[in-house]
Length: 227
Length: 319
Image (cartoon, rainbow over all chains, first blue to last red; front, side):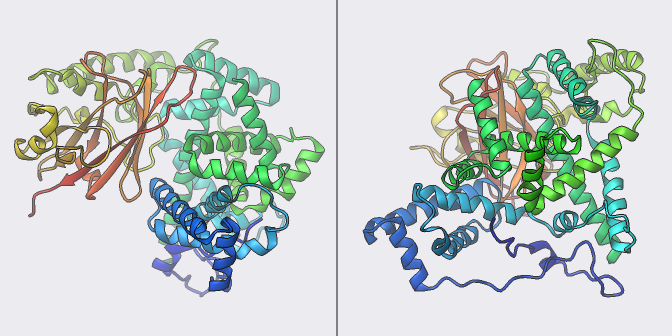
């Protein structure tokens, strides 16, 4: 599992503190000490790519262009920066995996880019949601209670924002226990005239929309509370 | 189909930390490079979370889920949201659907009109149908054909509104929701110089239509695809000739500026000489200089084609 990284651009742009200076839902995690790419580690990475330095440099450039293009397609604001971050991460991890990893070299860069991209998507609200245990019996702390209520409230709000068809589809799709659920999904797919796999894809897209809406809503309401 | 099952099985193994490093790397490369594969993986993940919540995982799977899957913060956040969704579903009073009518016809209406519809299914279906007829008449009047090929404009009406998740907000809905009766201008020009004509000849209008040719910014001998938006342009309709080896019943597009702007599903124009789709967008969404549209054909069995790209630049008069 990779390190969690430093990406919290939003909180850097909008520094917000609660009135008593304590932790809020918008607080980013404490940044770790930044690893710096040295000439030596860069050379090791190139050598790992190919023993011929010229070929390695060519491959490096191809991968870099590919990374930048894909980050751009994914809508990232700073694709070159993320490509650099990917190379830094590979160079840093190389000593740990060099003995273990026997696969093709190029895919490894894109595999690391996948993690870099996921970290880019992390917002302070998502991280806060991830790190709070709502099931704890002593959920007394103000911030955790607020966060739970915020989640429930934003979920209700975002469900209402869905189109009635999508809302109904999601309700039916997740309705019932195991066998009932399977049968209901089959019925939904048949009534829509699509395959079960396509229905599942639709449900996933609606769920993703819901999740984005919830996180945006939570961030907005948390900001209203603390400003 | 078998291929899908194999892929999903592998994704599930990946999520539970069961794959060797080399296979994990290849899968992650695909997750990064292939949007559809990433969507499939998300669907598998949603199901896995759902099974965990309902205690449908085996003992071994449950342990791997807790030890490996929940090791990533976004997965933990997904679980929290899924738990909240589960609680919301079980606390809602859900009306059991009539047999064989799980979904009503309401999904065909723009969400603006749906808010006026009563919750009773039988009444709402009849009212929805009446509203759809009235709405279609208003739309037809707004888009009365004034030129050849204007059938493509009507396709924007058939585009499924607000059912497919949109990355941006607001999601692109057809301009004629407002019943705009402005006439559109004649379309383009000879193929070679189309972009140039698009810049020079169009007078200001609330609805502006542009044909965007596939490929890079500049085709040999021609000008780049340009979309000229005047101050009073409210809606931009982009007509995209389809550049695929085969024809598909549906297409999926993504509009990308300096980030995702919009996405949706489209049907090709029924009455057009050459296959094309059209996208209607609020003009205010196009506030950058350069955009890319990636288009994929979606086959009846859900397979999607390799993407075709369209680039265009937006020109606005200086104020």
